[in-house]
Image 1 (cartoon, protein in one colour):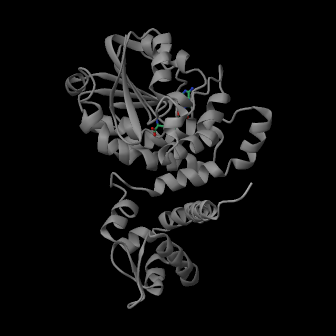
Image 2: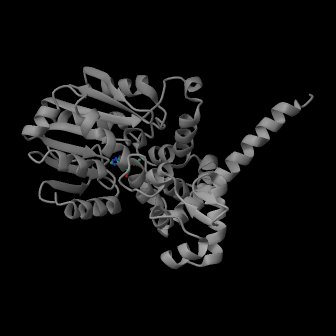
Length: 351
Ligand SMILES: C[S@@+](CC[C@H](N)C(=O)[O-])C[C@H]1O[C@@H](n2cnc3c(N)ncnc32)[C@H](O)[C@@H]1O
């Protein structure tokens, strides 16, 4: 078979971009953990000035700065020999409150990749790996990556897209956030709806400890209770609203979890299911967002589900059809796609 040189060169060009992006993961985490982006966000600096400001070694820093400038993550001025952040670079790399803050995604990637040697063994054995067994960067990166999206969409768009939920939350509702991780979504909701009472559940004890700290720090500790519990077993009845953010597909038994949610809801309660954006057919997910999610799913979501009972392994790209089936098997009669963003689909299920 003759190799088409144009196609080969195009593929190799793509490979160089991907390899750069692969090692760039570590570069972004270094930049975030050492406060380099934030320091650069304050104004242009030479490597020596930035080293003094951030108390880091100038030689290492100079190499890092060069890698960032080559990747387009920071800007270099060869006349002044200074590095800086453009408005867009600062918005995405230096401002933790930005709806498009990116470093958490790389921290999540780095933490997930630490599991690769074990994942290779899982491919051979078919065994699972719990969320709790991953590197710490997975938990912190996940929260840092997801929170800005929730802050930008949850209260302003997702809740109003649901039938009759906003009013209930405003006047005082009982809410459960199941698989809440470090509680970013729970705390955002609690701050937005001061009349309501919130319960966050996750099977990972360290995430729950961190969530409790966040609730205290954010001044909502009196209305938010975090408890270690599995989705099939969380306590409480008559919730007006139950939410699951980006975790139904991680569960071994999503149908069992859905049944438990159903019996925990009040008669006219609502279940909101936030899942990664996905189409039903593989061919329709073969795009950059699908690539991100299938990769994280191989490292995190599928092994997590495989480590639990039933081990349904929906995967992070399950799509509307399969999520609908999960809810109908659990006895929910009404199901609809309430809204979506490029990264998430928000479903509404009601008894
Ligand atoms: C991708 S993280 C999402 C965390 C959080 N909802 C968020 O959006 O930031 C998935 C979460 O599901 C939790 N999880 C997985 N299986 C679970 C189960 N069976 N019961 C409760 N939590 C579970 C994990 O511990 C993890 O915190």
